[in-house]
Length: 260
Length: 258
Image 1 (cartoon, rainbow over the protein chains, first blue to last red):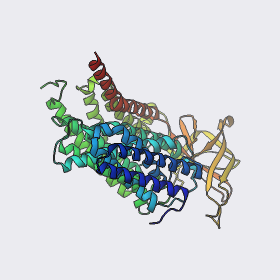
Image 2: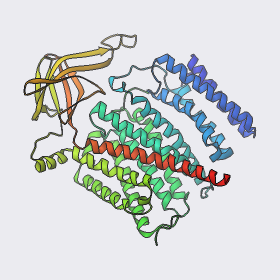
Image 3: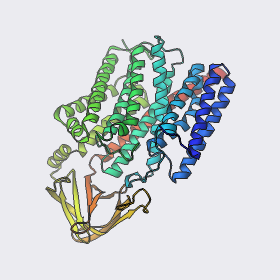
Image 4: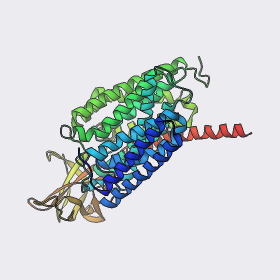
C-alpha cells in the first residue's frame, strides 16, 4: 500500500473521487448528477491513461498496473452503452466496479515502467490486449449481473442483461484468443503452447461457450444454472488476468513478461 | 418433436447440447489441470491417446451438429461449429503423428519441428532436437548465418551492474539450395522466414565458442487449415454476437416505423 505522489497518481485519485461521488449521487437518487460525475471520472481516467502513455512512450497495456488503468478507462463509455439494459442498479454497480479496478492501480501496483522484451514488439500487441480488456470488462459485468440474479433467487428479467452482455463480449474474447494464437505463431513458432495463461483463457472461453449452450437449452433462457455458469466465467477471467502475477513464481509461463 | 423455430427443443438437439456441455466441462477441468501442471505436462496430457480420442469425438460431434437445425439454418452458427473442426484437422496435420501419416501416404520425409544451430559465417541444414541437440534429419536446403546482431536498451539506473536488457536480436541469413544462394532475409523475433514448407523463427543465440544463432524450424503443414478455421471462427462469432442482434434491432425499428 502506497500513495502515488505524481501527476498520474493525482489523476487516478481524481477518477476514484469522481466514481465515489457518482456512487453517492446514485444512492441519493440524483441520476443526472451521478452521470455528470461519472463523465468527469471518465475524463480523468482518459487523462491518466494519456499521461501514462506519454510517460512511458508506448501504449500502456503491458504491466498489470497499466492493464488496470486501461480497464478503468474502458468502463466509463461501456457503462454509458449498457445502462439501458441494466437500469438504475447497474449504474451503482458500475461505479463500484470502477472503484474496485482503480483501488489496486492507485494503492497497490507499482507504477515503475519496465523495458519491453523483444517478443512484445509486434503490431499485434495492442489489438490482442485491447480485445481482451474490452471483453473482460463486458463479461465481468455480465457475470456480476448473473451473480445479482442468483442473489435475487429469480429467473432473469425480460431484458436479460446477463445474456446480452455475454453475447456482446464473447466475440471480443474470441478475437483476443485468435489474435493471441496468430501472434504466438509469429513470435514463438506455434499458435498454441499449452502455456498456463493460454489454458486459463481457454477455460474462460469454454465456460462462456458452455453458458450459451446451456442458455439455449433452458426453456425460456435466463435460468439459474446458466447464471451460475456465467458467474463462474467471471471467476475464470479474474484468475486469467491475475494468474501470471499470483502464481508466476510457482508456475512461470510464456506470458510472464513483467513483475506485478 | 421438430425444432419449431422458437424455444422448443427437439430430443436430438437436447442430446447434442448436453453432450457438448459435458465436453466443455471436461475441457474446462482438464485445461485448469493443465494450467496447474505447466505447459510441458499439459501438452503431454492433451496429446496423449485419451486426449486425442477426446478431440476426435469432439470433431465428430461438431460435424454431426452441422447438419442439424438450427445450426444448419444459421450461417453464423454453421461457421462457429465448422471452424473448430478445421482448426483440429489443421492441428493434426501439423503435429508429429500427422507428419508420420502424411510421410507414409505421400512417400516423403518432412520433419514437424526442430532447431538449426548456425555459427556466424557457416551454413547448416542439420535439424536437431531443441533441448538435447539430438539430430533429427536434414532439411532440403541450408541456411547460412551471414551476421548476427543484438540490440540492447541504453544503460539505465535500474541495471547498475551487468548489461542492460536486450531490446531485439536478429539473424541475417541466406538460404542455399544445392549450394547456390536463393534468398536472403533477416529473421527477428515476431518476424519469421517462410521457405520450402517451413517457418524459421529466431529463437535463441550464444557466443561460445563463437557467435551462433538458434532458429526454430516448424513445418507449415496444416497451417492454412488452422488459419482458415481462425478466420471462420472470428467471422462467425462476430456475425452471431453482433451482426444478428443489430439486424434484429433494425428490423424491429423498421417494423415499428411502418
